[in-house]
Image (cartoon, rainbow, N blue to C red; front, side, top):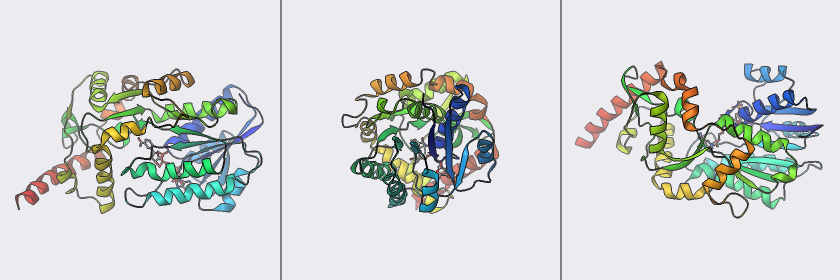
Length: 348
Ligand SMILES: NC(=O)c1ccc[n+]([C@@H]2O[C@H](COP(=O)([O-])OP(=O)(O)OC[C@H]3O[C@@H](n4cnc5c(N)ncnc54)[C@H](OP(=O)(O)O)[C@@H]3O)[C@@H](O)[C@H]2O)c1
């Protein structure tokens, strides 16, 4: 463990950065380490940020687009967790992410005492724009000879609560659970894991001697499962069946949602249609990381032995996963509407 170092975490109000800073706070409290934790946030007045501040985290107001705030946030920093994001899906939106990353790189290269940047990346696969911005940023970091460790984040289990939860058949309230929000087939194989556990892995990397993971890529994965296996594991842990009812393209195109949201679903359908490419993408590590998901799982477990499986995670989060909510009722109503509309459109 390190002493007298300052770690800067980007995106601390989000899923990944939030999970990283949570572990860093508890580890530094537990080990009584003299580490300074710092975050750069766009809104320092939120309750989440205030709670972190009360735990001793230094807060800098700013953004990746604001060089002065980046310079302020980087004073005295030795290690960084960086996660870049884009605001929209598909098309050229990845360029925004690349530009955000480049703005951070411009400041990182000026630093004299920087020891390690842990960058959350994704594979660069044709047509998979989600990874395009990240791999461009990664490439620039390598060209600039920055001391990086890349971490490939898994498909979050938390998506089964926040993004694609199973929803009860009748208006989200009655009947069996159905799962089909995700426009893909059951055969998709992806690295899965809880974003909380991703945070534990990244925090552990940041707390270890720099050389342990410098110029390496860590694919964070709890389990390498087909969606069909995820479904079975979740059914067992929930103690009730989940019907598989994926949304067809002609249905989701009729959803009463803004164009941008439909483009988001199109993006997932396109990316996941060619799933063998997505699956392979997670293994391409050019000699810097694990060569199979099996060895990636082993490595992840070495760093974080208590990592949750989909089964243990589902058992812990049973209530959240099956909770009835107005949002689920609205989603269910929208899907009924889209199915009816698609029948009319197709009949024309
Ligand atoms: N969902 C999955 O299963 C999955 C799996 C693997 C990888 N990913 C990747 O994960 C990324 C999203 O990460 P996440 O889930 O942690 O996102 P998130 O929860 O939306 O958090 C994004 C964070 O970045 C901050 N941020 C956004 N724009 C910023 C800017 N211009 N300057 C400074 N900070 C900025 C946000 O701050 P504010 O609070 O100010 O908004 C927020 O803290 C995506 O690129 C996605 O591709 C997702």
